[in-house]
Length: 191
Ligand SMILES: [Cu+2]
Image (cartoon, rainbow, N blue to C red; front, side):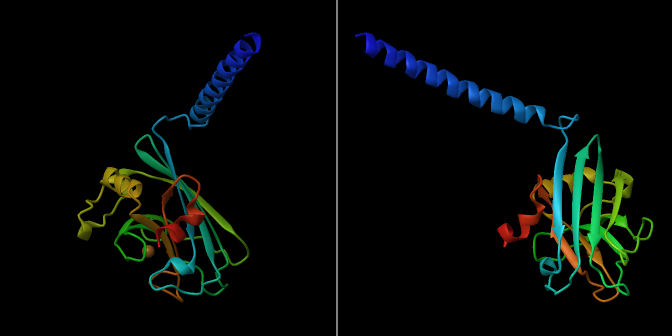
């Protein structure tokens, strides 16, 4: 009788312990969120294989973009372009993987300052994007200034970042924006 009771007590203790573990896990996840509780992070890994059509560019780029407080905060690092083939624009398009869509907003080049040369090593540019920075794509019924619709497209996996160069003016490296810190895996999963 005694051992039966002990086993029962152990089972209850185990259940409580497991329950406690999952509560602690949920709490720590909640704590890891950014200050703005509505903030969302997107990442993209830009490579030539993601362009349409694919190319053999040695260059790579990594974008981290945070949505919050009605604006986007972003950081883009790029490297590996040939010295004489530096990117002249980096921006975000609306389009699903392997489809070329119109431009939504710029990181460098276009409506923003020129893209710094990466001829002597990796370059990181940072900035914020406000509704006024959104130029469209109007042909896809994304109105200029409508950042909210672009964010919805981003959440649906329908935006990509790319960089254009003199060698491949249509776009040399590209990456789909995906939620969280898994941008490096995105294209493989989507294909
Ligand atoms: Cu582009």
